[in-house]
Length: 173
Image (cartoon, rainbow, N blue to C red; front, side):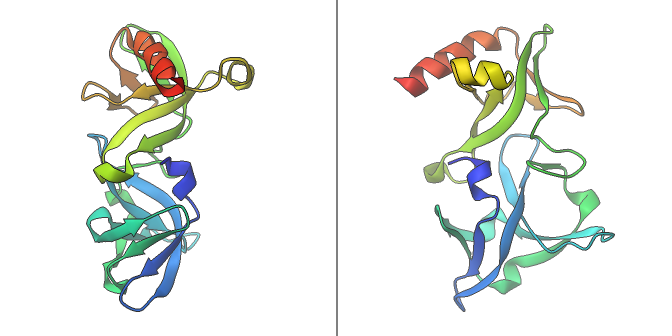
């Protein structure tokens, strides 16, 4: 499953069967794990966000995300949210992906995670531009512990472009 597919999904409270809100963004940690979900509804000048910790998510699918109960929704200070996928001051989407030896691989367009593995991020979808996407398709880079999220770029180990090719071949068969 990809993060982009989760944005906008309805979040339901399992105890009452009530819709709590919709997913606005996904909160991630420095070590490539999903920390939680941010729900829509933050005021324009508000410094707090409505969040749900990943531990409080009991199930998720293509149509909805199920949480334990409405008490799982917390107000979180925006400054306490380290990294997000879509919006915010440290967002992953559209960040450049650079190798440590200076090779630009493209920009982050989406993030893959395994529904069976819980909150583990598997890899990044990378675009090298619209024309390249049309000709070659988007690329996929598996996550490793050496990858880090910086202020202006995701830094990946040297020679990661070779791993991109392998990822494309293994994804396409």
